[in-house]
Length: 561
Ligand SMILES: Nc1ncnc2c1ncn2[C@@H]1O[C@H](COP(=O)(O)OP(=O)(O)OP(=O)(O)O)[C@@H](O)[C@H]1O
Ligand SMILES: O=P(O)(O)OC[C@H]1O[C@H](OP(=O)(O)OP(=O)(O)O)[C@H](O)[C@@H]1O
Ligand SMILES: O=C(O)c1cccnc1
Ligand SMILES: [Mg+2]
Image (cartoon, rainbow, N blue to C red; front, side):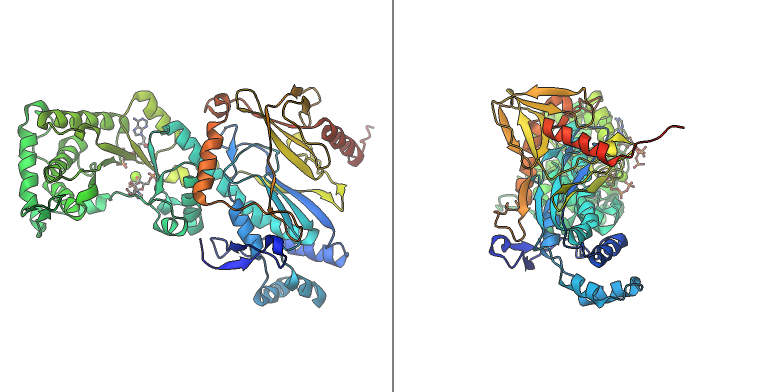
């Protein structure tokens, strides 16, 4: 995270030092024009200081699933902690809003910050569901309105790609290593950096993105490309052939010959007989050269020419030569063809080598697979049976190929203590009015049972006490729940001028751990890929009645003629 910091507010309660947004483009100007035009209209009407409450939420889980992981909160808080328009921004705004002649408005814009704003949010990395506010933002209406676009922008892709990563982790299984390889295919630099950050939170183990490793401390991993293999033409290109043994006790003066000796031994070995004849010597040169550069963690991409007839035997010759000097090679990467079949064949080959030469552990050499992988292909590999230990995933993961956007919204739910509602022909688009509190109710078996939204002044649900949970819009859907445990979801991450304590922003590792724990505690039928059971989101009886009272109040009565 950038070292530069800003004072949260002048007020002591929130004055802890908070970093800047990762992307320097995240400024108050990163918003839609209509936020500024509305700010002017509010100001002109003397309404700009009206106290507004907005909810940020989404309406439908992505990827055909029944869960979402909330991410992007830390960036939102960093954004508001640094919210200040610069003189040059004001000059620009004047030029694009030429009909506004009152200097007073621009003086007002110049002064605003987020010291009078309060942000309540569900902790980042939590499993979340449609309609439940991920964030509740309170403050002067003109200021909070300006936050709408950047907040949605910061949460939307972050939550989508975190969820995508969690889904890939789910299908791959806990024991597999997941590597994010998407930078080259991501939607621009911010897409790439964000993908690395949030796929790590969603359960990936490492990234190939060096900048993300530097910015966030995410573990970095990588192999090599086909270009490295095809750049070699002959073994004679290797000039410095000496390699010190792992323990430093001796020097092998001609590692190239040692590799060739091992290749002949593999070729002559009875148990491996018939698998291959001559291997590609330029590939052997590339592998040997890479091993000389990285003897401690030698890993080779084996599909440049022919996996079975060349890549695998060449890799094993180099790996065995390293092994005889005390090194433990890391494994191979497969990047084309039938990954299930090839990984199974590679495993058989490694095990045969282990047996033939009595080298303990060689059979379990790590096999990494890549090439347009996604949830479906990993699922297919699982069904076929495979020997892949690690997946390198790029395009489908970072572009969220299966669903382009999460569709978060930011809706006004109260102004000057007056609840507001947004009606729609589409019931799913009707907003839930009022400043609200949200709770997760846990059942006897420890699983979350239902989320319940209630009015702010209602008494909160209590463990062991029966509470009526109602579908917000469907009268017949309701149930009594006796929770074993109650968790309040919205916590104060930005108290503004109020004296409320501020939740700490956890480290990326802690957010990742939270995400893993949250996914783990869900009932399995909500998580399965095919026809998952929807998790229930409900409102209290009192809020239900109020929603429908306000609905009738605001909706004009039609007339049939
Ligand atoms: N056993 C398998 N079952 C299902 N899908 C697989 C299996 N093995 C590989 N795939 C997927 O099949 C697709 C193969 O793609 P494609 O035909 O473009 O690659 P290729 O020809 O093998 O490799 P390249 O063109 O990169 O040399 C990839 O999306 C890959 O993830
Ligand atoms: O397949 P993805 O999930 O996007 O993972 C990243 C891909 O990037 C590299 O390919 P490269 O840029 O060399 O292109 P190519 O393999 O498609 O030719 C790598 O070999 C993977 O195949
Ligand atoms: O390190 C790798 O193997 C890698 C990195 C990015 C994209 N494809 C592969
Ligand atoms: Mg590829």
